[in-house]
Amino acid sequence: MSDDERIAKDATYWIEQINRPAVDTSQSARFDAWIAADPRHGEAFARLQALWDSAVLEMALSDPDLMIDGDDSEDPIAMADVPAPTHRPWRWIGFAAAAAIVVAAVPMSMMSSTVQRLETTKGAGATLVLADGSRVELSPNAEIEAEYRPWSRTVTLVRGEAYFDVRHDRWRPFRVASGDNEVKVLGTAFNVDRQSETSTFVEVFRGRVGLGPRNGRLVPIEKGSAGHMAGKRLVMSRLDPSQQEPEWKSGWFDAAEVPFPVLIDKLNRYSAKPIIIRRRDLAQRNITGRFRVRDVSETLGALAAYGVHPTETPETIILE
Image 1 (cartoon, helix red, strand yellow):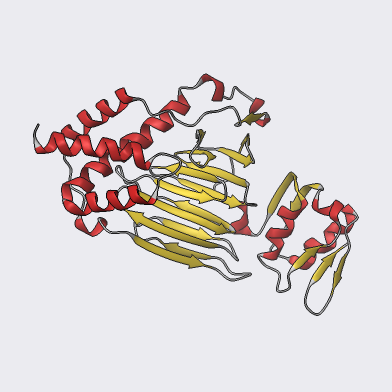
Image 2 (tube, rainbow, N blue to C red):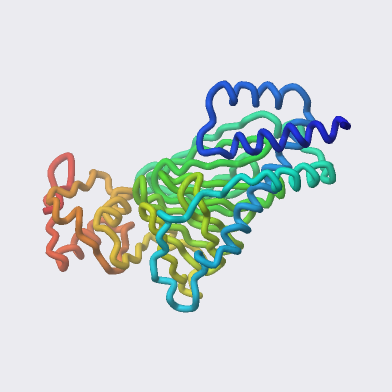
């Protein structure tokens, strides 16, 4: 067995291990040692990881149970019965063969892990360039943590909303983790709104992304479409053809039967004082309307039409 064949075989083993839902600490230490032992190990692993990610997305695309026909895109897709990708031995043979053929080099500057932490303050967004050249526009009061490895780019949306214009990288998929959910792409432009630990709203303005639960099946979302992942249910919808960017950038929020706390979270991105929902029934209510959340006073005044009345104290604004 040649060195290239041996490295490809070892890399297929680590692909199978690393892509499991849980990896024990002893395996992680062994993997780090294997990567450090030879630069060719990282090259082979990066290529196989890219092939793995492409295969997982294609599995979702070819699954008839996940297709959405015509205008029934508002129907929810139940994710509870959708299994995570299954590791099949024949796939690793195919990956090994592919790794022996693909020989492009990974720059040494990409072999170590790089971490960026970025955040914005209330009332002020920001446009930033990530270490890989991708561009991100953060809403007010947003925070991300970006980590770059030879085989992956992962951004954790800690809070708020972010519009990504991802630089294409054939070998390193770009993931956005948002609570229990994740978005995965190779290069595109999309917006991610972390509404809660279990609720994520994604709009795609260029290219295609996969959206779903972490370590689970991803559903493709095409350009001009949106997906709302809430718990284990996914609701697809169409974007207005005239919409070229997320509405938060102009300070607006279109609410269509969204939980009331989601609207208040967006107001809190601009409000100098924290806005608190005191009544339990308000927290459980859905709301529909178009709100200029950048203007906190105007939006709070508009809530009177919904039977909601703000009371301002020196420290907070209470909704009753």
